[in-house]
Amino acid sequence: MTTALTPEQVKDSIDELGRTWKSFREENDKLLAEGKQTQVQWTEKLHKLNERMDELDTKLNRRPAPQLSPKDTQDEQARRQKAAFLNFCRYGLEGMSAEEKSLLAKDSLPGEKKSLSSPQGVEYLASPEVTNEIIKGVVEFSPIRTVARVRTTGAKSVKIRKRTGTFAAAWIGKTATRTETTGLKYGLEEVPTHELYALVDIPFEDLEDSDFNLEAELNLEASEQFGVAEGLSSVSGDAVGEWEGLLTNAAMGFTVSGDANLITGDGLIQLYVDVKDAYARNGTWMLKRDSIGKVRKLKDSQGQYVWMPGLSSALPSTILDRPYVEAVDMPTIAASAFPVLFGDFRRGYTVIDRVQIAVIRDQFTQANNGAVRFHFRKRSGGQVVNVEAIRKLKIST
Image (cartoon, rainbow, N blue to C red; front, side, top):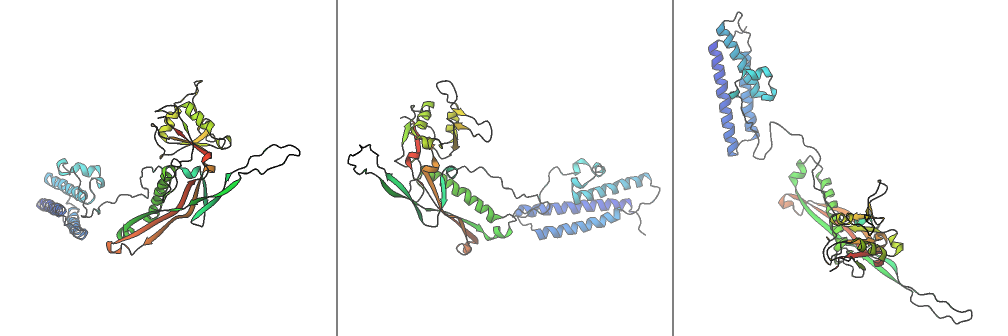
């Protein structure tokens, strides 16, 4: 049968625990500052400290002698304070009850918490929840594929039959001599495919230790960046190793806006009229978001807004009753610029897909550097195939 601790033993236990905890904290802070602390060292020290705490806790929880004197009451208070301090050392403030907190002096509770961690930044005492979501900024690119004609091929290029000339019919009398009506010609419009690529090196350890599907994330990133490159090329590509841009085709016609600095309502109306009716009926406007803002403020001669907002999701917003798409790669409004396109893009521009995004997982090329190389590639082509189906708006000089 055990006996209660004497007042001297309680005092000695409290002093010993305080010295033990202070010594542990000072040594641990010193090792952290020097970058020498390791998980094994910390675990061993914590284990020894916990053993000592358990031993003291056992002594302090012995049944006290009955009929406490005033001095014994003070000893019991000291014992309860000691037990509260032990709980603080084990569980922190969050693991203590309100009664235990009240037993400790305010100046004995730390005002600052230190995170014990290895030099590599791996926390040992608390692990945060990590989600599978990645916060990203929006990647914008011109949506040419939503309005152009898109088809696939198994060859390096596609040749499309094209009428390059036509004959004219003529009236003739009943017995008059008929002559040949010349001018009918056909040719081929060739759309070649070009290659896009991206190389990404990922360390072996990142692939081995990551709890996130890193390869799937890389595929998504490649898809976005290939879309960015294709969108830019569809607007301003020079057709040398890349797509032909809508604005770089010299044969495409244009309409002058009528103002050296602004898009005008009259200029938009004239551009709409200059496109043949067969194309205009299926026409789409293409311009960047800033230009859309300028167009929304335009009014016709009757004071009516040229821009007409859709009244439901089934009725898209329109300019002169035709829908529009936002293309981030279109030029801004400036003198001699071409900030607006209008026409039937499905009949005027063709996109050819030869190879969808393919990935090669190369574990050898960068092995000396401790990394795996991911080689992403795609083959596609884009080209203006009918210049009369699309027309540009030029800001006056």
